[in-house]
Amino acid sequence: MFEKGKYDEAIKEFKRTRALKKYIYSYIGLGRVYFLKGENKIDEAIKYYKKALLIKPNSADILNDIGICYAMKGDKKKAIEMWKKAIEINPQLKSAVENLKRIENKK
Picture 1 (cartoon, rainbow, N blue to C red):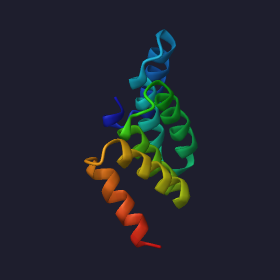
Picture 2: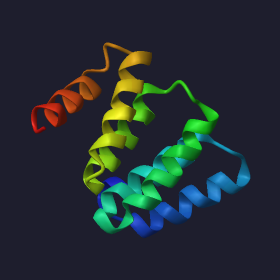
Picture 3: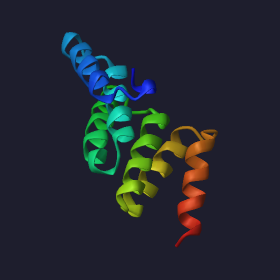
Picture 4: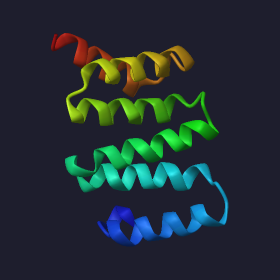
């Protein structure tokens, strides 16, 4: 749904699914949709990504996504922290490695 830009419908569907059972993909989906809705929804995206992280704490992909959200908010310190954790878990996660290099080069 959110691939087609129907963000509000996607949010309702993910929340409905989440209510049925704590599916990690519902939280990840909600995080992604709020991220795609733009800068004024980044805090909501972070909230749902963190809920997903509670279910799967060693997910480098979720940590990477949270890092991207923090970078969008301008919180470089938190972004770097998330990307370093992601790389510690999965040193082969190319996007986290590239994100970290990019932000560290801007210092």
